[in-house]
Image 1 (tube, rainbow, N blue to C red):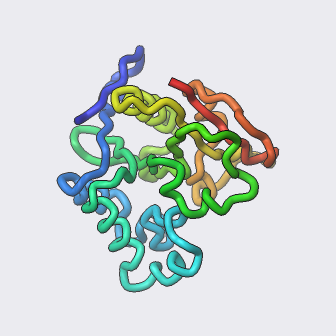
Image 2 (cartoon, rainbow, N blue to C red):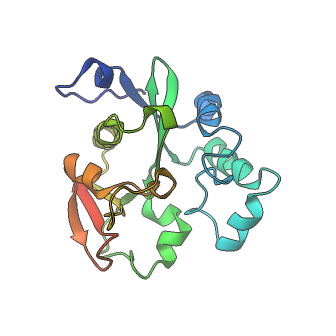
Length: 200
């Protein structure tokens, strides 16, 4: 199912569509991440694997194969943002308990026992950055979550302390983007990495 959130927007934003990653669109995800697996052969497995498994997975396509196995198993992995059928962005999105590092986090530990889906990272293709796509992407995630009956979306973005944040450090998302999309701070154990939530 492809989601196009209802909104007033520019022609560029209207071209965006969103769909969950699945075997049928794996090639689009693979092309988006490229030979470096988005960054350092991560393949969006940093939050999903133990530190040792993640480090080992940087070699011999270990992390890529782990992500592919996850997708082929039918488990939720995340959403792609597309323009004219080509993937230009990625957002990890799955139940919080699916992310190993969040289970072990002292800073972003659960604040209640509610069922939560997490967004631990986002990736926008380099030539498409700084066009407001992150905000529209988050609106697309919200629209998809509403269709799926998901009640709480949680994320852990950064608030830069000094000027512009280099792209390589922005993969956790910028708080300003989440704020514009309607997320609110739920916990501020970390002053510069607040926990934010959107409740549907």
